Image (tube, rainbow, N blue to C red; front, side, top):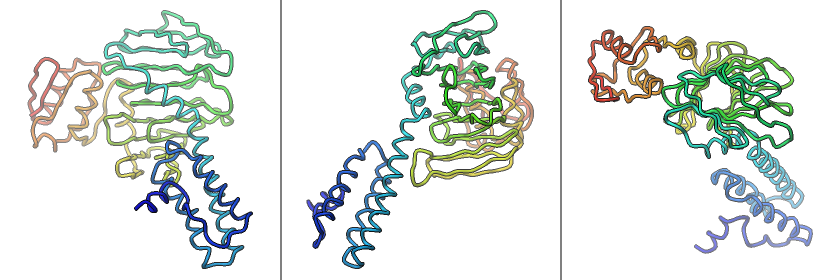
Length: 374
Protein backbone atom coordinates (compact mmCIF):
# COMPACT_ATOMS: atom_id res chain seq x y z
CA UNK A 1 0.00 0.00 0.00
CA UNK A 2 2.81 2.42 0.81
CA UNK A 3 4.43 1.93 -2.61
CA UNK A 4 1.13 2.62 -4.41
CA UNK A 5 0.50 5.71 -2.31
CA UNK A 6 3.95 7.07 -3.08
CA UNK A 7 3.48 6.59 -6.80
CA UNK A 8 0.23 8.55 -6.82
CA UNK A 9 1.99 11.62 -5.48
CA UNK A 10 4.20 11.93 -8.54
CA UNK A 11 6.49 9.98 -10.85
CA UNK A 12 7.52 6.58 -9.49
CA UNK A 13 9.98 6.92 -6.64
CA UNK A 14 12.16 4.06 -7.98
CA UNK A 15 14.40 4.68 -11.01
CA UNK A 16 14.49 2.28 -14.01
CA UNK A 17 17.70 0.24 -14.15
CA UNK A 18 20.49 1.14 -16.53
CA UNK A 19 20.09 4.93 -16.52
CA UNK A 20 23.13 7.10 -17.24
CA UNK A 21 23.92 10.20 -15.20
CA UNK A 22 22.31 12.34 -17.89
CA UNK A 23 19.23 10.13 -17.85
CA UNK A 24 18.98 10.51 -14.09
CA UNK A 25 19.17 14.28 -14.43
CA UNK A 26 16.30 14.24 -16.94
CA UNK A 27 14.25 12.05 -14.63
CA UNK A 28 15.01 14.31 -11.67
CA UNK A 29 13.94 17.36 -13.65
CA UNK A 30 10.73 15.58 -14.60
CA UNK A 31 9.97 15.00 -10.91
CA UNK A 32 10.65 18.66 -10.15
CA UNK A 33 8.34 19.70 -12.98
CA UNK A 34 5.55 17.53 -11.64
CA UNK A 35 6.02 18.83 -8.12
CA UNK A 36 5.82 22.39 -9.41
CA UNK A 37 2.26 21.79 -10.60
CA UNK A 38 0.40 22.48 -7.37
CA UNK A 39 -2.81 20.59 -6.70
CA UNK A 40 -4.79 23.80 -7.17
CA UNK A 41 -3.30 24.41 -10.61
CA UNK A 42 -5.02 21.53 -12.37
CA UNK A 43 -8.21 19.56 -11.81
CA UNK A 44 -7.21 16.36 -10.03
CA UNK A 45 -8.43 14.06 -12.81
CA UNK A 46 -6.52 15.94 -15.49
CA UNK A 47 -3.34 16.16 -13.44
CA UNK A 48 -3.49 12.40 -12.92
CA UNK A 49 -3.97 11.83 -16.65
CA UNK A 50 -0.94 13.92 -17.54
CA UNK A 51 1.10 12.27 -14.82
CA UNK A 52 0.29 8.81 -16.12
CA UNK A 53 1.27 9.77 -19.64
CA UNK A 54 4.73 10.75 -18.49
CA UNK A 55 5.14 7.76 -16.22
CA UNK A 56 4.06 5.36 -18.97
CA UNK A 57 6.99 6.40 -21.13
CA UNK A 58 9.36 5.42 -18.32
CA UNK A 59 7.64 2.11 -17.59
CA UNK A 60 7.84 1.10 -21.25
CA UNK A 61 11.61 1.62 -21.46
CA UNK A 62 12.45 -2.09 -21.39
CA UNK A 63 10.18 -2.70 -24.41
CA UNK A 64 11.76 -0.17 -26.75
CA UNK A 65 15.13 1.11 -27.77
CA UNK A 66 16.77 3.75 -25.61
CA UNK A 67 16.43 6.57 -28.13
CA UNK A 68 12.74 5.95 -28.79
CA UNK A 69 11.96 5.82 -25.08
CA UNK A 70 13.45 9.19 -24.35
CA UNK A 71 11.97 10.64 -27.50
CA UNK A 72 8.54 9.55 -26.27
CA UNK A 73 9.29 10.95 -22.86
CA UNK A 74 10.36 14.27 -24.34
CA UNK A 75 7.09 14.42 -26.25
CA UNK A 76 5.14 13.71 -23.09
CA UNK A 77 7.05 16.42 -21.25
CA UNK A 78 6.39 18.87 -24.07
CA UNK A 79 2.69 18.08 -23.81
CA UNK A 80 2.83 18.56 -20.08
CA UNK A 81 4.68 21.86 -20.34
CA UNK A 82 2.32 23.23 -22.97
CA UNK A 83 -0.79 22.11 -21.10
CA UNK A 84 0.51 23.19 -17.71
CA UNK A 85 1.76 26.59 -18.80
CA UNK A 86 -1.40 27.19 -20.83
CA UNK A 87 -3.57 26.38 -17.86
CA UNK A 88 -1.54 28.54 -15.51
CA UNK A 89 -1.79 31.39 -17.99
CA UNK A 90 -5.53 30.90 -18.17
CA UNK A 91 -5.79 31.08 -14.40
CA UNK A 92 -4.27 34.55 -14.51
CA UNK A 93 -6.46 35.93 -17.30
CA UNK A 94 -9.06 38.64 -16.99
CA UNK A 95 -12.04 36.26 -16.90
CA UNK A 96 -10.87 34.47 -13.77
CA UNK A 97 -9.77 37.74 -12.17
CA UNK A 98 -13.26 39.17 -12.69
CA UNK A 99 -14.89 35.97 -11.42
CA UNK A 100 -12.89 36.35 -8.22
CA UNK A 101 -14.04 39.97 -7.88
CA UNK A 102 -17.67 38.88 -8.32
CA UNK A 103 -17.35 36.23 -5.61
CA UNK A 104 -16.29 38.82 -3.04
CA UNK A 105 -19.18 41.24 -3.55
CA UNK A 106 -22.38 40.74 -1.58
CA UNK A 107 -25.74 41.39 -3.23
CA UNK A 108 -28.26 43.99 -2.06
CA UNK A 109 -31.79 42.59 -2.13
CA UNK A 110 -33.37 46.03 -2.38
CA UNK A 111 -31.26 48.27 -4.60
CA UNK A 112 -29.05 48.06 -7.65
CA UNK A 113 -25.43 48.67 -6.66
CA UNK A 114 -22.47 49.96 -8.61
CA UNK A 115 -19.17 49.21 -6.88
CA UNK A 116 -16.13 50.97 -8.31
CA UNK A 117 -12.58 49.68 -8.33
CA UNK A 118 -11.73 52.09 -5.49
CA UNK A 119 -14.45 50.38 -3.36
CA UNK A 120 -16.91 53.27 -3.50
CA UNK A 121 -20.51 52.03 -3.70
CA UNK A 122 -23.26 53.92 -5.52
CA UNK A 123 -26.82 52.76 -4.85
CA UNK A 124 -29.37 53.03 -7.64
CA UNK A 125 -32.92 53.08 -6.37
CA UNK A 126 -34.78 53.13 -9.68
CA UNK A 127 -36.62 50.09 -10.97
CA UNK A 128 -34.76 50.42 -14.26
CA UNK A 129 -31.40 52.16 -14.02
CA UNK A 130 -29.24 53.39 -16.87
CA UNK A 131 -25.47 53.92 -16.82
CA UNK A 132 -23.34 55.44 -19.58
CA UNK A 133 -19.54 55.53 -19.48
CA UNK A 134 -17.96 58.64 -20.98
CA UNK A 135 -14.52 60.26 -21.34
CA UNK A 136 -12.44 57.12 -21.51
CA UNK A 137 -14.29 55.61 -18.56
CA UNK A 138 -13.48 58.32 -16.03
CA UNK A 139 -17.03 59.71 -16.07
CA UNK A 140 -20.26 57.75 -15.51
CA UNK A 141 -23.64 59.27 -16.33
CA UNK A 142 -26.31 57.70 -14.07
CA UNK A 143 -30.00 57.94 -15.01
CA UNK A 144 -29.31 61.27 -16.76
CA UNK A 145 -29.47 62.88 -13.32
CA UNK A 146 -26.05 62.48 -11.73
CA UNK A 147 -22.41 61.98 -12.67
CA UNK A 148 -19.74 59.90 -10.94
CA UNK A 149 -16.04 60.49 -11.56
CA UNK A 150 -13.42 57.79 -11.15
CA UNK A 151 -9.69 57.38 -11.68
CA UNK A 152 -8.80 55.09 -14.58
CA UNK A 153 -5.19 56.04 -15.27
CA UNK A 154 -2.48 53.43 -14.69
CA UNK A 155 -2.18 49.76 -15.48
CA UNK A 156 -3.90 48.55 -12.31
CA UNK A 157 -7.27 50.22 -12.81
CA UNK A 158 -9.21 47.27 -11.39
CA UNK A 159 -12.84 46.41 -12.17
CA UNK A 160 -16.26 47.90 -11.65
CA UNK A 161 -19.21 45.71 -10.67
CA UNK A 162 -22.90 46.33 -11.35
CA UNK A 163 -25.22 44.13 -9.27
CA UNK A 164 -28.95 44.08 -10.08
CA UNK A 165 -31.26 42.42 -7.50
CA UNK A 166 -34.38 40.45 -8.28
CA UNK A 167 -37.21 42.80 -9.20
CA UNK A 168 -35.01 45.35 -11.01
CA UNK A 169 -33.19 45.77 -14.31
CA UNK A 170 -30.40 47.92 -15.67
CA UNK A 171 -28.81 49.00 -18.93
CA UNK A 172 -25.17 50.00 -19.22
CA UNK A 173 -23.23 51.50 -22.11
CA UNK A 174 -19.53 50.77 -21.85
CA UNK A 175 -16.82 53.16 -22.95
CA UNK A 176 -16.46 51.39 -26.33
CA UNK A 177 -20.16 51.90 -27.13
CA UNK A 178 -21.25 48.35 -26.30
CA UNK A 179 -24.71 48.35 -24.72
CA UNK A 180 -25.76 45.69 -22.23
CA UNK A 181 -29.21 44.99 -20.79
CA UNK A 182 -28.95 43.28 -17.38
CA UNK A 183 -31.92 41.22 -16.26
CA UNK A 184 -33.11 40.78 -12.67
CA UNK A 185 -30.75 38.92 -10.33
CA UNK A 186 -27.65 39.57 -12.45
CA UNK A 187 -24.11 40.82 -11.95
CA UNK A 188 -21.62 42.27 -14.43
CA UNK A 189 -17.90 42.78 -13.73
CA UNK A 190 -15.93 44.88 -16.21
CA UNK A 191 -13.07 47.37 -16.48
CA UNK A 192 -13.93 51.07 -16.61
CA UNK A 193 -11.99 51.21 -19.86
CA UNK A 194 -10.55 48.55 -22.13
CA UNK A 195 -6.77 48.39 -22.37
CA UNK A 196 -4.86 46.05 -24.62
CA UNK A 197 -6.11 43.93 -27.49
CA UNK A 198 -9.28 42.49 -25.96
CA UNK A 199 -12.50 43.67 -24.33
CA UNK A 200 -13.60 41.32 -21.55
CA UNK A 201 -16.49 41.22 -19.05
CA UNK A 202 -17.82 38.63 -16.59
CA UNK A 203 -21.52 37.80 -16.19
CA UNK A 204 -23.66 36.09 -13.57
CA UNK A 205 -27.36 35.95 -14.40
CA UNK A 206 -28.76 37.08 -17.75
CA UNK A 207 -27.81 39.87 -20.14
CA UNK A 208 -28.41 40.94 -23.71
CA UNK A 209 -25.34 42.31 -25.50
CA UNK A 210 -25.15 44.69 -28.44
CA UNK A 211 -21.40 44.75 -29.00
CA UNK A 212 -19.73 47.65 -30.76
CA UNK A 213 -17.75 46.33 -33.73
CA UNK A 214 -13.96 46.40 -33.42
CA UNK A 215 -12.30 43.64 -35.43
CA UNK A 216 -8.92 44.30 -33.87
CA UNK A 217 -10.34 44.11 -30.31
CA UNK A 218 -12.54 41.01 -29.86
CA UNK A 219 -15.13 41.11 -27.09
CA UNK A 220 -15.33 38.25 -24.57
CA UNK A 221 -18.16 37.42 -22.19
CA UNK A 222 -17.01 35.10 -19.41
CA UNK A 223 -19.40 33.10 -17.23
CA UNK A 224 -18.74 30.37 -14.72
CA UNK A 225 -19.07 27.61 -17.34
CA UNK A 226 -18.82 29.32 -20.71
CA UNK A 227 -16.82 31.91 -22.62
CA UNK A 228 -18.26 33.74 -25.64
CA UNK A 229 -16.09 35.57 -28.17
CA UNK A 230 -17.49 38.17 -30.57
CA UNK A 231 -16.27 40.94 -32.87
CA UNK A 232 -19.49 42.90 -33.15
CA UNK A 233 -22.92 41.35 -32.84
CA UNK A 234 -26.03 40.91 -30.69
CA UNK A 235 -26.72 37.94 -28.45
CA UNK A 236 -28.18 36.85 -25.11
CA UNK A 237 -26.37 34.93 -22.37
CA UNK A 238 -28.11 33.27 -19.43
CA UNK A 239 -25.93 32.00 -16.60
CA UNK A 240 -27.89 31.96 -13.35
CA UNK A 241 -26.35 29.99 -10.49
CA UNK A 242 -29.67 28.31 -9.71
CA UNK A 243 -30.14 27.04 -13.27
CA UNK A 244 -28.70 23.70 -14.36
CA UNK A 245 -27.39 25.18 -17.60
CA UNK A 246 -25.64 28.10 -19.25
CA UNK A 247 -27.12 29.27 -22.56
CA UNK A 248 -26.26 31.65 -25.38
CA UNK A 249 -28.68 32.75 -28.12
CA UNK A 250 -27.33 34.54 -31.19
CA UNK A 251 -29.48 37.26 -32.75
CA UNK A 252 -27.16 38.50 -35.50
CA UNK A 253 -23.51 38.29 -36.45
CA UNK A 254 -21.50 35.32 -35.22
CA UNK A 255 -19.95 34.15 -31.98
CA UNK A 256 -17.48 31.48 -30.96
CA UNK A 257 -18.06 29.94 -27.56
CA UNK A 258 -16.11 27.64 -25.31
CA UNK A 259 -17.93 25.56 -22.69
CA UNK A 260 -16.15 23.94 -19.76
CA UNK A 261 -13.23 26.27 -20.56
CA UNK A 262 -11.49 25.58 -17.25
CA UNK A 263 -10.76 22.04 -18.39
CA UNK A 264 -7.59 21.34 -20.36
CA UNK A 265 -8.73 18.06 -21.86
CA UNK A 266 -12.49 18.43 -22.26
CA UNK A 267 -13.20 22.04 -23.27
CA UNK A 268 -15.91 22.24 -25.96
CA UNK A 269 -15.73 24.83 -28.74
CA UNK A 270 -18.54 25.76 -31.12
CA UNK A 271 -19.51 28.57 -33.47
CA UNK A 272 -23.06 29.90 -33.65
CA UNK A 273 -25.00 31.43 -36.52
CA UNK A 274 -28.11 33.62 -36.04
CA UNK A 275 -31.21 32.00 -34.49
CA UNK A 276 -29.10 29.28 -32.89
CA UNK A 277 -28.94 28.54 -29.18
CA UNK A 278 -26.12 26.76 -27.34
CA UNK A 279 -26.97 25.12 -24.02
CA UNK A 280 -24.25 23.71 -21.79
CA UNK A 281 -25.10 21.42 -18.90
CA UNK A 282 -22.03 21.21 -16.61
CA UNK A 283 -23.40 18.25 -14.65
CA UNK A 284 -23.65 16.13 -17.81
CA UNK A 285 -20.81 17.97 -19.57
CA UNK A 286 -23.05 18.25 -22.63
CA UNK A 287 -23.25 21.08 -25.17
CA UNK A 288 -26.25 21.18 -27.51
CA UNK A 289 -26.91 23.52 -30.43
CA UNK A 290 -30.53 24.02 -31.57
CA UNK A 291 -32.61 26.32 -33.78
CA UNK A 292 -34.84 28.66 -31.77
CA UNK A 293 -37.31 31.50 -32.11
CA UNK A 294 -35.06 34.22 -30.72
CA UNK A 295 -37.93 36.47 -29.56
CA UNK A 296 -38.76 33.95 -26.86
CA UNK A 297 -35.31 34.46 -25.35
CA UNK A 298 -34.64 38.19 -25.79
CA UNK A 299 -38.03 39.92 -25.45
CA UNK A 300 -37.47 40.40 -21.70
CA UNK A 301 -35.14 43.32 -22.41
CA UNK A 302 -38.04 45.23 -23.99
CA UNK A 303 -40.34 44.62 -21.02
CA UNK A 304 -42.39 41.62 -22.09
CA UNK A 305 -42.19 37.87 -22.64
CA UNK A 306 -43.14 36.20 -25.91
CA UNK A 307 -43.72 32.52 -25.19
CA UNK A 308 -44.48 29.51 -27.37
CA UNK A 309 -45.34 26.25 -25.62
CA UNK A 310 -43.08 27.21 -22.73
CA UNK A 311 -43.23 24.99 -19.61
CA UNK A 312 -45.15 26.71 -16.84
CA UNK A 313 -42.39 26.06 -14.29
CA UNK A 314 -39.85 27.88 -16.48
CA UNK A 315 -42.17 30.86 -16.94
CA UNK A 316 -42.85 31.16 -13.22
CA UNK A 317 -39.13 31.04 -12.47
CA UNK A 318 -38.55 33.98 -14.82
CA UNK A 319 -41.42 35.91 -13.28
CA UNK A 320 -40.12 35.19 -9.77
CA UNK A 321 -36.83 36.88 -10.68
CA UNK A 322 -38.43 39.76 -12.52
CA UNK A 323 -40.95 40.65 -9.80
CA UNK A 324 -38.95 39.45 -6.78
CA UNK A 325 -41.74 37.18 -5.60
CA UNK A 326 -42.03 33.47 -4.88
CA UNK A 327 -44.17 31.87 -7.60
CA UNK A 328 -44.55 28.10 -7.47
CA UNK A 329 -46.14 25.16 -9.26
CA UNK A 330 -48.09 23.41 -6.53
CA UNK A 331 -49.41 20.28 -8.23
CA UNK A 332 -47.98 17.49 -10.36
CA UNK A 333 -50.48 18.16 -13.15
CA UNK A 334 -49.54 21.84 -13.34
CA UNK A 335 -45.88 20.97 -13.93
CA UNK A 336 -46.76 19.55 -17.35
CA UNK A 337 -48.75 22.60 -18.47
CA UNK A 338 -47.31 24.85 -21.20
CA UNK A 339 -48.19 28.43 -22.06
CA UNK A 340 -48.16 30.41 -25.29
CA UNK A 341 -48.75 34.13 -25.55
CA UNK A 342 -47.36 37.53 -24.64
CA UNK A 343 -46.94 38.72 -21.06
CA UNK A 344 -46.47 42.44 -20.46
CA UNK A 345 -43.91 42.83 -17.69
CA UNK A 346 -44.96 46.44 -17.16
CA UNK A 347 -48.25 45.15 -15.72
CA UNK A 348 -48.81 44.43 -12.06
CA UNK A 349 -47.79 40.88 -11.12
CA UNK A 350 -51.39 39.92 -10.34
CA UNK A 351 -52.46 40.88 -13.86
CA UNK A 352 -49.69 38.76 -15.37
CA UNK A 353 -50.62 35.75 -13.24
CA UNK A 354 -54.31 36.23 -14.08
CA UNK A 355 -53.45 36.05 -17.78
CA UNK A 356 -51.62 32.76 -17.23
CA UNK A 357 -54.46 31.35 -15.13
CA UNK A 358 -57.09 32.15 -17.76
CA UNK A 359 -55.01 30.64 -20.56
CA UNK A 360 -54.15 27.43 -18.69
CA UNK A 361 -57.43 26.97 -16.75
CA UNK A 362 -55.38 26.86 -13.54
CA UNK A 363 -55.92 28.80 -10.36
CA UNK A 364 -53.42 30.30 -7.97
CA UNK A 365 -53.42 31.19 -4.30
CA UNK A 366 -51.58 34.11 -2.74
CA UNK A 367 -50.00 34.26 0.70
CA UNK A 368 -48.16 37.56 1.13
CA UNK A 369 -45.47 37.42 -1.65
CA UNK A 370 -45.94 33.70 -2.39
CA UNK A 371 -48.14 32.59 -5.28
CA UNK A 372 -48.96 28.93 -5.88
CA UNK A 373 -50.56 27.54 -9.07
CA UNK A 374 -52.73 24.46 -8.86
